Length: 125
Image (cartoon, rainbow, N blue to C red; front, side, top):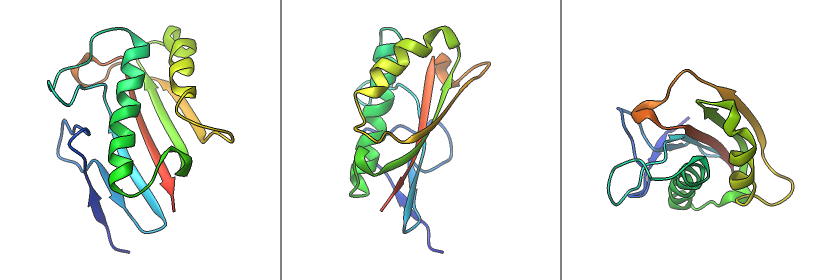
């Protein structure tokens, strides 16, 4: 199997990893935090704004691989507070048509840069 890195100026890496890896049939995107690519800082606002920024960052990386939200088959979402679940769902739902991707959402003790949400995804060709 060959690995090809996928990157976007809108995707932000806060560690030594690729924004995504194109593995042929599947493209695996690293978790994106709600970082504004213009400022390098967390977006201001609540969980809705943070969820949208995560998704916008992810879809920019996905576009570099020639794919869109219609190609996403699996998402993993990490929340620091499950009280944000319903509001995150509302923002997240706007990015996908039916049938929506499979998904797992878990609560975590913390995220880099004190983000409230991080999202990763897998897309298929």
